[in-house]
Length: 594
Ligand code: GCB
Figure 1 (spheres, helix red, strand yellow):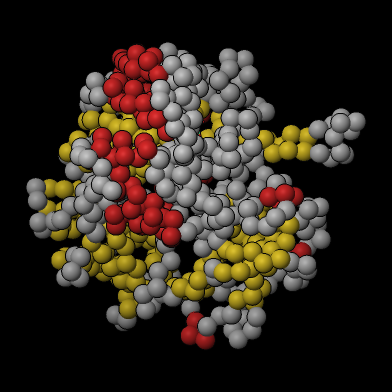
Figure 2 (figure 1 turned 180 degrees about the horizontal axis):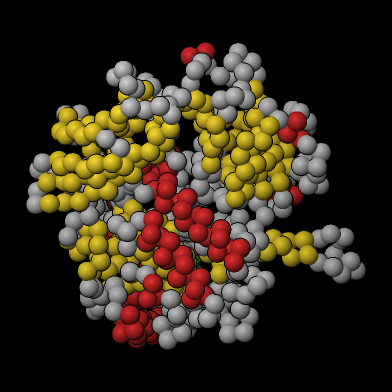
């Protein structure tokens, strides 16, 4: 699934903007075939965005079920004889799409793109109607998982009362979250390209494969450097070539070649073209280290969310650019796409900016921290969940495999890996990841203790989320270093693998101050981080620290969340808390840049 490109042969038409929108309060739209006619009684809704925070109506924000989007599209005259594709960057959590009343796509999962060839369904010079039904329900067959709770006691609850239960804290934002685009390709076209890079002495080795559809006689590949100078060429669908004295893609110092794939007919007529930004770099785990371009890499950064005021989880280049500038300002070199794959636009930015990405699937909420209340059983995480998990892994790797910024796949966050049934499950997911991409290490992010974990033999790197001083021994900052040391050593003893601490942190409400520090103050947040660092700095198998979280974010309502999760080092509006300056000093090794 290639990212849509505008390049003279292919064209892109953005469908962002206001769409007609209707909440299906009675969940009757499918039965009444709302897709057959223009929707009645609609309101305006921007795409991309989460719809939840945009009206003043609690019933809309908390609606469980379907919402409907609709807009009219026109097909440009020049698109005669082209293949026309309608593509949705993401719709959370599930979607069905129709064009002129005909179903063209169905997609399960809220964080990856889907598309449909609509060439034969659209009429040139006429209005064409696109309808998308988006559903936000999460059950145990979904990623992330959840369940609908029904309340039967009508003396206490209204008839049919139900709630969406989720076992993660981020708000279950819903809607069309990423851009919708129409794009063209020629009838015979490049369907996919896969690129793998290697380094030999000072040269870059580029191995590629191209898959095509239709009558294509030959494939040519040209590599251009950042000055647009042709530096190498190749031919054929599967091949490899060398770029002499290559500029490497390095963390904080990105260099992107442009690989131009071009297909030609028997007569030598150019048919299709696709330009892929390619960074030459290697990544591998060696003993206690993770090497990027054969140099040990230490992860400094955050777990994030795609989250901002009003937009919810809606893709916003403004937020993306600001976040990247703050990441660089604070001295971060990496982030994890907690807890779902982020937008393609953001991944392309990370390639260009040289930020290192730990790419995570939406497998979150699979743990109850209990011996008896299990998660891996027939009623909860089961065969169906596994099937979907594997599907999401396939879609994520297919989408992100060519990004130099992605150095590792995270196959799940906080799973009950103490349960016996978690072992074959995680093993299957880890093996699928390796089968699809043997060039990148994989990892799983743990909340479990080393003594009970059953799965880390299947991954290359161990990631840990640790909340000493917060969720355990709350407020006892003096115990953190000791607890952390003990646990790190136990993990290392058991598996002998490098470890990244992918979450540690404390809620701090911006503007709350107190010395000596107490919970929720900015001083407490700094002190807690500092205690963790004392431990990390002692162990050479610790290869990174990612603070939870980059910025405050919206959560479901709950007694431990004061208008959202406040573990951000930046507020939700991206203003620094005091800990930002502490981290900047630690990560940049110098006094804060104001
Ligand atoms: C975690 C989760 C993360 C939460 C965080 C917290 O372990 O991975 O999604 O937001 O804890 O703040 O509770």
